[in-house]
Length: 59
Figure 1 (tube, rainbow, N blue to C red):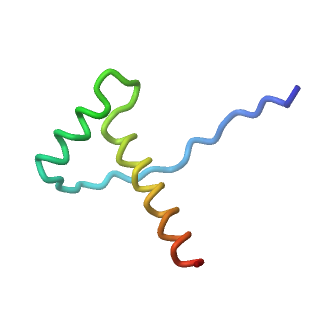
Figure 2 (spheres, rainbow, N blue to C red):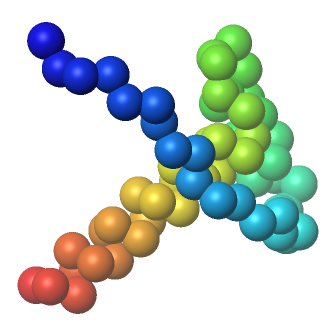
């Protein structure tokens, strides 16, 4: 059994960005009924996009 470690919460910074209304509606529809909020969705989408860019740069 692995040893329990208290997780470190990553630092965060508040940013204000504007989204087209259509994108907001699509994201809200996609997360409806899930345990995910708008910020979590955008953070994960951005993380995946950055990973994809890194993969493209390495090819």
